[in-house]
Amino acid sequence: MKTLIAFYSRADENYMAGRLEMLKVGNTEVVAEKLQKIAGGELFKIEQVMPYSKGYNDCVEEAKNDQRRNARPELTHYPDSIDDYDVIYLGYPNYWGTMPMAVFTFLEHFDFSGKIIKPFCTHEGSGLGNSVRDIKKLCPNAEVKKGLAIHGSNASRSDEQLEEWR
Image 1: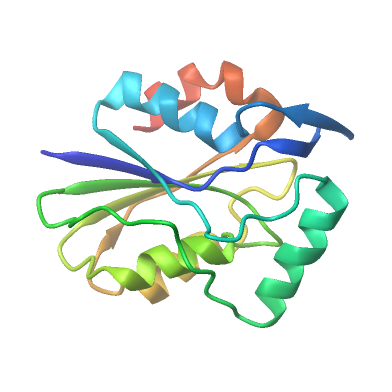
Image 2: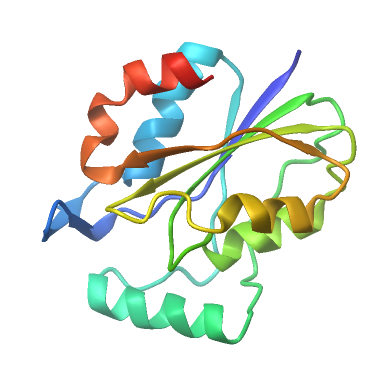
C-alpha cells in the first residue's frame, strides 16, 4: 500500500511544557519524520502562503482569528494527486480543539473517497480534541482510523508510541 504523510507544523516560538521555546523544527514535523522512518511513505508539508507570525502570542491571535472566521488559508502547493495513495497519515498541532485551518484547506482540496486516513496531532494537554470528528465531516467517504495524540514536548521521544499506533 502506498502511503502519504501529510502534515502541518510550525517552528519558531512554541509553547512547550509550560514555557515558550524557540524551535528550529516544529513538533509535528519531528513526529512526521519519525513516522516516515517507521512506516515508510512520502512526506508532504502543508504550508500557508501567508505563514503565521514567528512569535507565539501573535501566532495564537492570527490562528484564532482564522478559526473564528472559518478561514481557508491559501496553501503554497499541493501534491499533484492523492490517487495513488491508499493510506494518508495526517499530522497537525491541536489548535483550540481541532486542526489548523490550513489543514481544512488541504482536506477540502482532494476527494478522499476510499482512502484510509490516520490522524496524529501534537499538543500540550488538549489531545486530539474534535479533530477526528472534523476530519470525518470533511472526508465522509474515507475510513478515518483511531488518531494518536502526542505531547509536543515529547515529540523527539515518540518512537515507541508511533510503533504501537501505526
